[in-house]
Amino acid sequence: MTTPDVIYADKHDNVIGSGSIGYAVEQGIIRRVVQIFLIDGAGSLLLQRRSAHSYAFPLRWNASATGHVDVGETYEEAAYREMKEEIDVDDVALKEVGKIFIEEDEEGYLKSFAMLYVGTSAKRQTVPDYHEVSEMRWFPIVDIVKWIERTPDDFTPSFGGGLEFFLARQSSGV
Image (cartoon, rainbow, N blue to C red; front, side, top):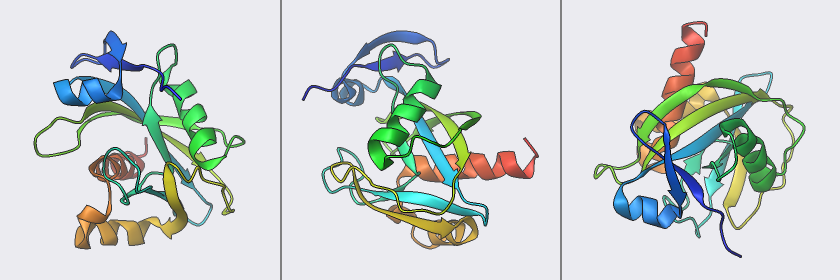
């Protein structure tokens, strides 16, 4: 199976081309990605643990669903596609929270603009794609914040940035 080309962007998130994820990582090219947070009515967030086969940060906890924006897609279309592909959820309406720039490691070679979406979902069993996701679990957001403070390497750096952004937007009423 060949993977579709992803969108490359400049430092202002203008499209500058497309190509493989691997090439973008090697060359330090910025990509467009999405993060989806599914939250239940009690304030718990569904997290996925990346599979051992993940190209970056295997076996670390991450947002409910994440992924690249493929050529021909908008951020929103990519969010719905990734949610369906990774965790088999297609009946949750998503709301755009906002966009942040993320560099996922100290060398800065994993660069992306991440559009964050949030959706309200009942606490239910999802069916993850086990090639991409090894485990799914609901956690109270307050517990996730404490967990990140204790052992940040349990999480992908992009998730930590996305959660900070989300909580700041929530506290400012946006």
